[in-house]
Length: 139
Image (cartoon, rainbow, N blue to C red; front, side):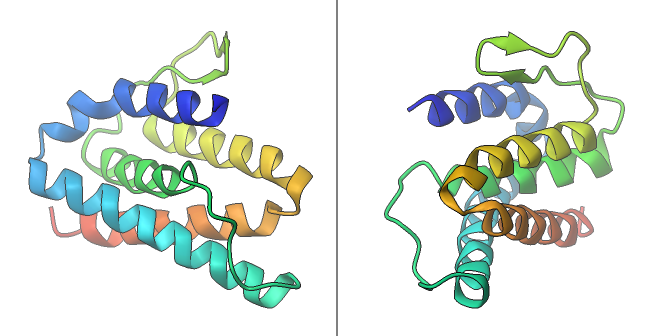
């Protein structure tokens, strides 16, 4: 539950900046990034784990959407700054979109490593970031 709250706080923080570029682009990045994160995680599990399927976690999907949106914002608004917090401890200095993406991916990977998901989280975020970068190139 706390992962969901952390992801929604990050999404709420960057929602206005991402919505400036159109709702269709926002939804494409969010949904496409979520799907790409899922497939990236499945790919990592397929080659690195004993089982190729992911657990049925509803919280997993929005991580990739946030990574894709941050890829867009890193391209179109690199001067924007976003607050990042580790649950209730906020980083004192706002971060650029790319730094927020790295912090977000590292936190997810660190918490996922306890369950054997380190490589899956990293590959999922990289794949979602690549999708977001490719789609942002059209803007």
